Image (cartoon, rainbow, N blue to C red):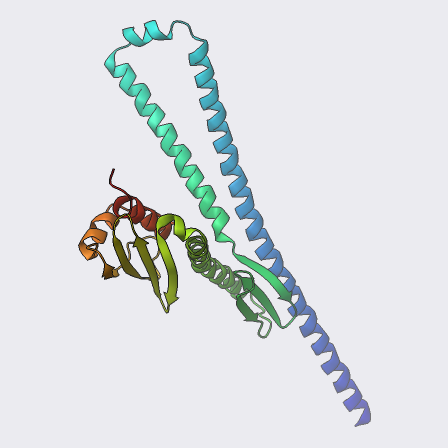
Length: 273
C-alpha cells in the first residue's frame, strides 16, 4: 500500500508539473501573439508613412519641374481645356489619397491605448488612460486544442481593440475639457462644468451684452455626431435659436467641442464691426 501511495503521489506531482508547464507555454504564446499583433500594426503604419513620403517627394519633384520649365506659361495658354481638367483631376486624386493615408495613420496611432502592467500564470492586467482604467484577464484551465486557443487570443485582441476605441474618445474629450478650462477666457467662456453626461458651458460677453449657459448631452457616438443641447438665457437675447443656427454650421468630428465654442465666440460674442 505504501508503495502504491508513493507511486500515486509521484504521478500526481508529475501531472501538476505538466499542467503548470502547459499553462506557462500557453501564456507565453498569448503574449507573443499580442506582441506580434502590435508589431504588425506598427509595420502597417510604417508602410503607410513610406507611401506618404513617396507622394510628397513626387509632389515636390513636380513642383521643381514646373518652376524650372521656362516654357510653362506658353504651354499653359496652348493647352486645351480637356488637358487642364485632366491634370486638375489627377491632382485632386493625389490630394485625396494623401489625405486618406494621413487619416489612416492617425487612426492606427489611436488604436493602441493599453499597457501591460502584470503578466503571470494566473492573469494578465492591462491599464488604460494613465492607469485610470484596469482590465484584468483571468486565465482558466489550459486548453488542449489549437482551435480553442486561437479563439481565446482572438477574443482578447478584440476586447483590447474595442476598449481602446472607447478610451481614445474619452481621452480626446478629456483633453478638450482641459483646454476649455484653461483657455476658455479667450472665447468668453466663464465656466466649464461636467454633471453626469452633461457638459455645462457658461458664456458671458460685455461686447454682445449677453450671458447664457449652454448644456450639451454627451453620448457614446461623440464626436461622430452632433450633440443635443439646451440654452438658459441669463442676460441678453441670445437663446436656442441663435445657438442652433451657429452649431448647424459646425461639422461633427475631431475636437468637435472646441470648434463649437470657437464658433459661438466668433459668431455671437464679438463686436460685429
